[in-house]
Image (cartoon, rainbow, N blue to C red; front, side, top):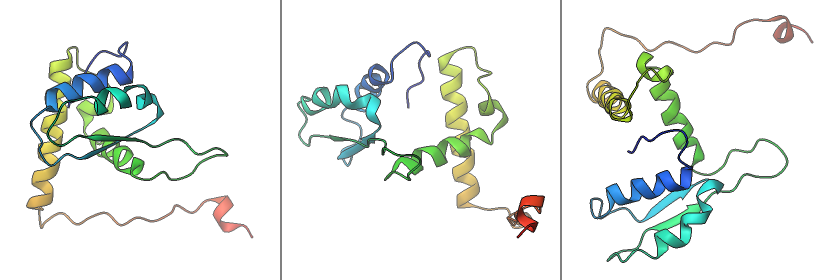
Length: 136
């Protein structure tokens, strides 16, 4: 993970991330990205790695909302991080502390998944009754 200032373009931030992960993850073969990362596809392909990483750009579908392949994984992860108060807004002054809070939140989530608290029952989901739901 790399946290950077908001004035850094997504593709340039991805270059920073790829430099950090270079040589660390031997099993990494494919990376999915949205259209903003199209301009670095050649840059990623030009890396001199034993096993090249393939950058697949998932384009938005024309004509409204469509669930895109693998994109939901990123959105779900952002939703999980947003549940932590310090990550629901950008409270951090420095990128390093923001990165640390993402790591702490992720570690906390993983620990809760590995050893759930038996005294806490998961909340059941129910739609609220509204006038629109009751008509017709």
